Structure formats: C-alpha cells, structure tokens
Amino acid sequence: MPNRHGLRRNEHRKRAGGVDLRLVVGGGRRQDFPKLKSNDVSLNIAARTQPHVQGDIARAPFADRAFFEVFFEFVDHGAFTGKNLGAVAESARVLQPGRRLIIHTGRGVNLAEVTAAMRAAGFKFIRVTNRGYIRITGRRAGS
Image (cartoon, rainbow, N blue to C red; front, side):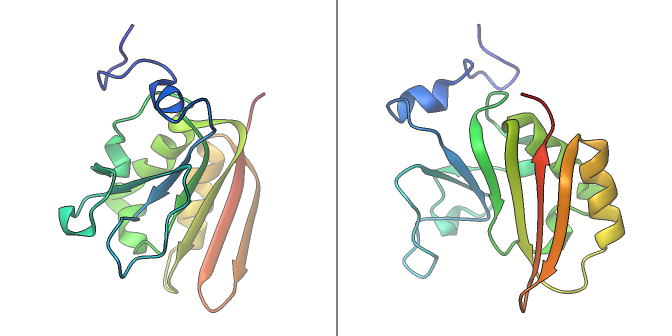
C-alpha cells in the first residue's frame, strides 16, 4: 500500500538490493560536492546539485523508516530552524528506530531550538560538538 508520498514501505531499500540506505540532506552528485557512498540517497531542493531526489526535507518524499541514517551535509541552519523546524520531525519519520541523525552546520545555529525539536521528535542521546563547524547528533528512540 503506497504511503502519503506514493511510495511503498521500504521501497528505497528494495531499490538498493536490501542494503541499508543513508539519506544525505543537502547532498548531490555534482563534481564539486563531497563524493557520495554507494548506499547514499541525496536530497536537495536545488536541481543544479544533481541530487538523487529533488525535494525538501521538511516534506521528505520517502517512506517511513526508510533510512538507517539521516545526514545533513553542511546545510545552512535555516533549512531546519525557525519556520523549517518541522524538518527535524520529518527526519525522525524517515529514520529507522534506534538510528542516528547527524547535522553538520555553521555557527550561529540556535542550539536550544534544534535540541528541543530533536527531543520533541523522539531523539535521545543528543550531543553537540564544535569541530570548526557545529555537529549535532541524536538517536531516534524505539527499537
């Protein structure tokens, strides 16, 4: 039975031959972008980045629990804060229980807002580190 996005549950996993997939938000296949791994599915709103799927993480066109990891690849924090805070909950929806959300972004992000949204979406073990960029990680609750 197709979900609200017209995709069947685990359809992306089947396309990858049963391999667990990682969603790379802000990624693409353009030569000047970081190289994607074979199990990566890139999602970007900009067609010029040559993503696997053109779209917005706030309305991700994927089945529930489709990915073992969701990675925001140096995405501007405006994509998941303020009016776009729903992107965090949508990341939880497409992430398998017990799996990880990783956000790499620049300084200036409202950490209290993001970590509160992560807790509200069911993420546990939330960590924030500064490695010259801000890295926020958390695990989706459940099993």
